[in-house]
Amino acid sequence: MNFFRYLLLLMLLALLVTGCSKKQEDAAKLEQELLNEDSAGQVMADSAEMAADTGASVLDASAIPEEEPPAAMPGQPEGSGYTVQVASCEERSYAEHVIDLYTNRGYEPYLVTVTVDGQTYHRIRIGMFETWQEARALQNDLLSRYSVQSWVDRVDTGF
Image 1 (spheres, rainbow, N blue to C red):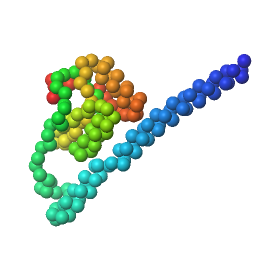
Image 2: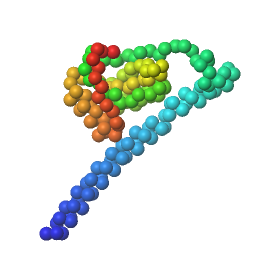
Image 3: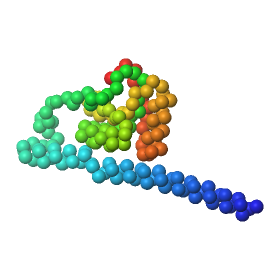
Image 4: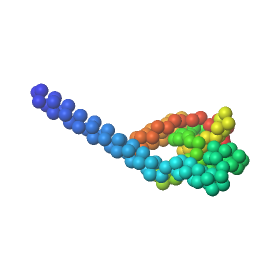
């Protein structure tokens, strides 16, 4: 009888290890995708090169044009309800890279640009749902497929 208990325990342990290793592989794959196309690092290198060409400092605010980025990319849903925010970053080029990544995975992400205390953030969101449960279902799907930590956000008045 004890033999069967040990055998059952070993089988359950093997299933648990197999399931966890799959999620680790998915997380490693996502991390590698993001590292392979490190747009943020390239933008800083391009800025330094451009500053060297013009004789300006990279941190010299006068060398940066005073242009406000667009509020959002085309395709942004209208209305109110719930959305799933998958990322927020300071570099627009990196935000566009993340949008391309989720678009290639079959989602319809969109970008919302906000300024908080003088700092501009680009928020990458997916979906506009009437109920919290619908948005939570997408959040769970992203977590199980890609090990992506996200959150559900309430949008009261549209964008």
